[in-house]
Image (cartoon, rainbow, N blue to C red; front, side, top):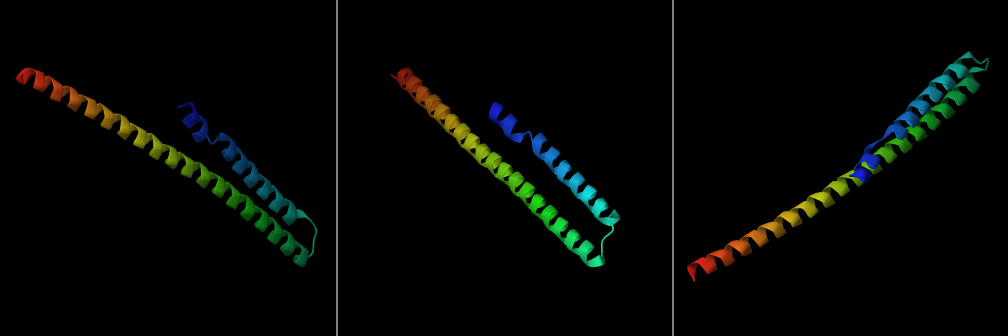
Length: 105
């Protein structure tokens, strides 16, 4: 249970995403206010856009990795639960069969 709570608490990645967005907005404002030629401005904007795209892709990939790990963990837990229920059902059936045989003897 502790692993699930640690794994699912995405507070750090949310903070990083907010930080990246804030940095991107700040950089865009700085670019727009800086005295540069049109060509330089377009190059800077393209570079910043590529940086933002890369950061967004990394954040998405990280989130998908977390989701996939949680899904796999859920599948394992469900299978473990099925095994426990199956074993308990077999034990109950065996106990019932034994009791019926003793009763009929």
